[in-house]
Length: 255
Image (cartoon, rainbow, N blue to C red; front, side, top):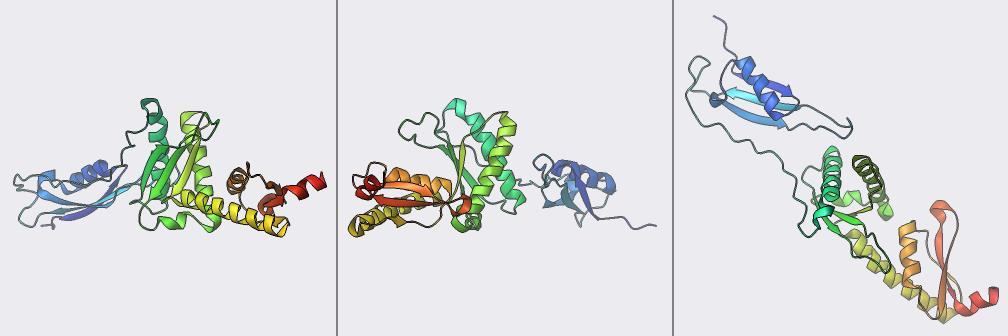
């Protein structure tokens, strides 16, 4: 008499489909097996990173396929995305939920399944009618998403914007932050701007800052926009573009 198979591993497009496949192969009901989810699977983004769910089913030792006692099914804990905070207006939640879902999916593809994404609407700047959605990523190991000078974070933001824009069929204004990095960086740049302005005034010489990405140069310009004694100007090309802080008397003399 052939030995009855008691353990099988099965795959399917999702966890439930994989379980059904395993039960069919064992020829038993769900009540008499222990279920271990080996991989929840992923639908991917536009097919990118899609994978099937993978489960292991083991017939409980006191039962056989011919005699299946009634027992409660083992609960399966599946990951659930954190809900979008209720501080957003009702009409904003659709875009916010899509943005959050896309970013969570990208993070999962990068092996950061435990990362959380908090979503809120930024405070509008003076004259700004459409402040961005801010998606703040938090969790163990997420600091690697920042990269040197925030370049990794900028790349992730660009990809997320493209995918969300395709989902909502329009332009979406969103910003990705990691554990409040951009807020801390903005405060640091404001302090730098005013410290270098003091140096320019004290020495009566133009101060040239190190190359910065566009959004950081913008912070420097805004920080000193109304300064009575210095003006700012960007010079250089592409990745080498930088801000100069010029004493106003020099600026007037050169004009």
